[in-house]
Image 1 (tube, rainbow, N blue to C red):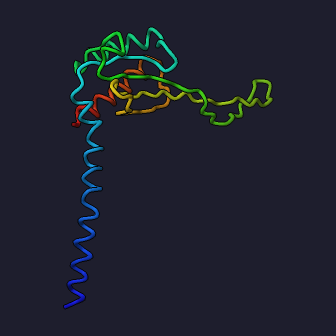
Image 2 (image 1 turned 90 degrees about the horizontal axis):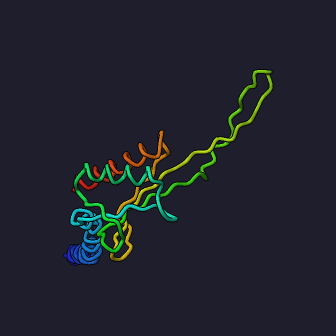
Image 3 (image 1 turned 30 degrees about the vertical axis):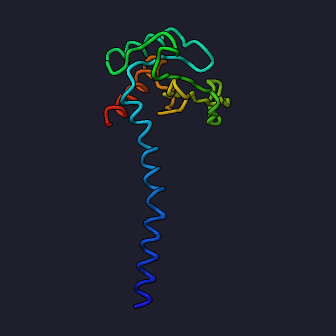
Length: 156
């Protein structure tokens, strides 16, 4: 009888100790989704300053076709900030090629990765991010990353 009470006490203590932590985690994890769903305006930029004109135009057009967010021209008027960045630092090694003369040549292989993230303009909290290897052109990569954002937001 005493062992049964002890087991029941330990089980209840475990639930009570677990409950507040899990409740807080649920609220915290839903915050980005809620903010993405509620936002109305978005500002498009690239890390380090202005985006290439083709990236900017593609992002504006793709967002306009989606219709979820209105693109604004300043951070101050935006609920969200869509920031693109890229890096060429992914060194994939070398490729051994053969010259027409029969000699060998080592060619370094680099990969460019594009990144997109959504930042809450109120407190600079990162709400979403996605990365992908450069695929074809800056325009197609920009469209694809926005499409991934759209799929994420539409799941909410």
